[in-house]
Image (cartoon, rainbow, N blue to C red):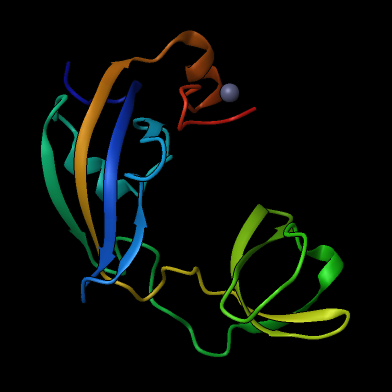
Length: 160
Ligand code: ZN
């Protein structure tokens, strides 16, 4: 079965930047399960997966524009720690979630104060060229519930 819109797809991937620095890897955990064509992956990444089948391996290189955009300087802002979705001790460089009207947003901690924290609003992967080494592990038809939710319910997919 080929990858196409509304297929439930499972992939293993290793993500590095242009210099080969490891950013993320599914090999030490469950593979990543997603619903194709429902904006769960970067569009430029999904485009390269169309038509692939189980066992296929591919390398996809995305420019910052195709991935998470360029970095913007001066995007640091101060937020109350109580507005963070992340609990526990905070440290510079840590990726935390802040609740916004658009939902949960991932930001990077710059400086930690007593009641407030300075965060960089750039996406943690902004400004980076991303290189994905991908192996297609499984492809199947999504069921009606998954299509209604816009995500898959496999291990490695959406958890309710
Ligand atoms: Zn669901």
